[in-house]
Image: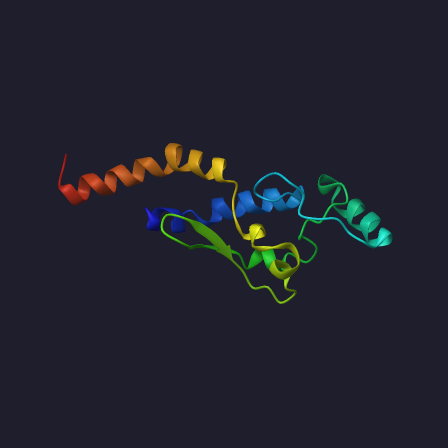
Length: 125
């Protein structure tokens, strides 16, 4: 299963970008708020989808460097270049994916290549 998930990096990354674009963590809560009012208005202006909440999308350096990697048995996290210590500021949750969405993806998308791999391994027609 790990190879299948890793090979789906672009789709998973796009889902993560979609979460960041609206300023959400995988659980649906907000990443955070800006303390500086001017910066809040600036960010709200350039990304109305996040409505002024933290979106981690200003330079896209963090997002562009993201790649999915195995974390613990059967779980995955994004790894990314983090020179601005975003994980330190906003927590490791910014590196995850919505669990329900990921489980649905496994059932709907990953199951097919996974079954092919099992059949190939077991030499089943």
